[in-house]
Amino acid sequence: GSRGGFVIVYDLRTASKWRVLEGHSGPVDAVAFSPDGDRLCSYSSQDGAVKLWQCGSQGFLGLDLGGLMGNSARCLKQHDLPAIPKLSQGPPSLRAWREISIAWTESGRILLTRENAQVVTIGA
Image (tube, rainbow, N blue to C red; front, side):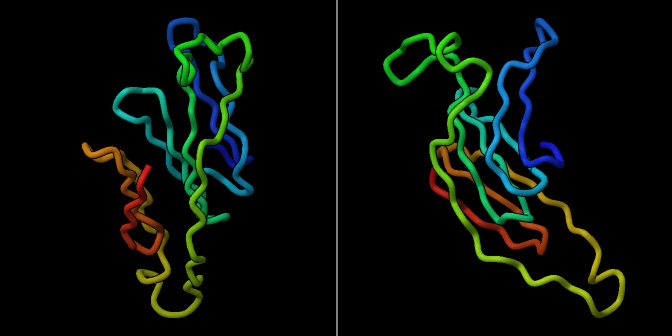
């Protein structure tokens, strides 16, 4: 993810940008590819959104969309989560930034651990 609210996916074979995923209004804190590699989920704690992206080169009809889509991908779904209150008081250990993670489950759902350690499961 990036501070600018987008995700850049590189093609490691050519060392070039393959897809640019734009849509978050704040820094992207976590990303994960689906097991088949055709989708990617991203999370921004600033905008509280989980976005699900179609980023494979094959479209829904099996057409090669690489030329049609350029180097961008489309957002399939957005899940807006409730804001988390900022911890401004208390000992530093309670105010510390927590690890944020996002992953796909075997059943195809998205498992997000937010900055307050809340675990959210989202149907993809």
